[in-house]
Image 1: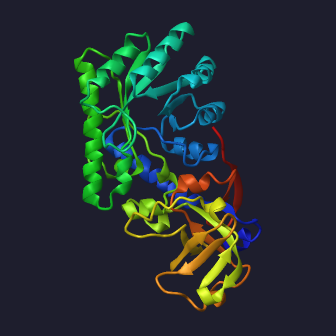
Image 2: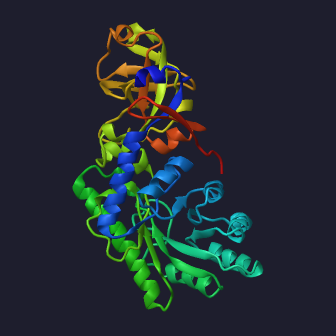
Image 3: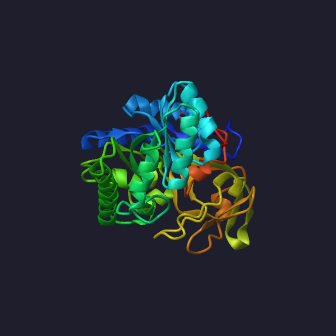
Length: 379
């Protein structure tokens, strides 16, 4: 019944397996409940109201966003507790102010004095007390103030003394994506926790407020053994999972809820290729598995019902053409194996990047029912 229903879909299409998604949501929420912390999902992966509603129904509180467009989108659906977890530029403060004045409890972040001073100046002029978290660098992966640096206190004073509400500290251990063993994941989760808690303790010791201690990534959230001192956890890609997360070791291919439905359009049998109508415009150019223990090219090939076909990957891609091949050797019978007009599903390297190629999801249930869910695009 499922395959028959998929035959009605024009390809390429982003397909969400609803049962898998729901299991992923419940797994994460139960983990956070067991660890005794609030869970604030990052909605940047799915960017879908229906997905966020499923997360709320499971017990999450508030959302994390990566764009102000996301904040506006989810606020329009009644979500008021929103954390904009990208360092804000002063030019975006009027847009943030508009959300706050309309009733959104928007929190923003910064990691430097210049931005902190700009936030405070704009806030005073607008008679608004922005709620701000300081981003902490706990792994040298991206942005943030290191917890031991004196700059942490300088940024905090610029906000607090400038009349803003210093809400707390926040970190994201993005380097956890480079882990591939349980021991590494547990260690990274503790490094993330300890660094952010240290930053909070330094602020409090200096007489500054620090109510929130926010940490999180999908790998560390699922691997943390203790979260003392943490008030909330954030994670996003867990809702769909992907091949990068498979290589990290926090899921299996059977947990991946997002795939791209594609159709075989031709063959280059002498090369062992099947050609499909999903190229990098559908899969994205993300090659996140290239540096991991297993390289899936542009994605893992599955049958139309979502069953992994071992050894077959999208080995290369052009804008609207994908090339499927068997690894490590050539399959001379690929045309017989995947005839013209065969529908297949490709699991993505990075769910966030692949989802971003589409404006809607085709959502499938185990009984073959189909639904269409809108997906937000833009900034």
